[in-house]
Length: 114
Image (cartoon, rainbow, N blue to C red; front, side):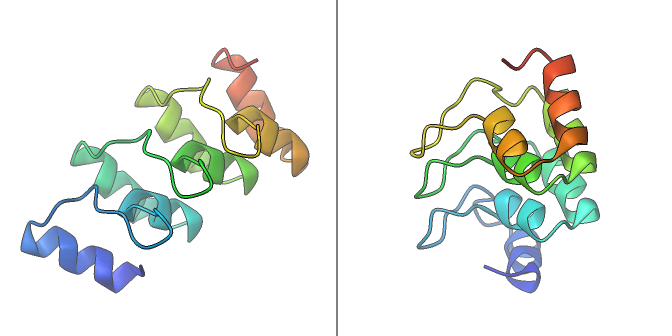
């Protein structure tokens, strides 16, 4: 899934929680590509934020592991589940720690992640 496909999904009114062959949703893709405008747009449309891809990763895990702090803040504000665990056994905080994403670690801890 790419940005133009996501925009087509939005315009056509299709299911915003659709998952591609890897389980990636439009929100996960926007976060993965670090597109903050599209991330905000999707969150304003009340997409499901805790869906998991085929690796058991959520949008918050992707954002935290890439130190995409703007998205981490938005997802925390939207009440993303801080306790979910990926298939590799990591939470969003674990992804942030493993990738030395200090700012994301701080944000997640401040939000109550353990």
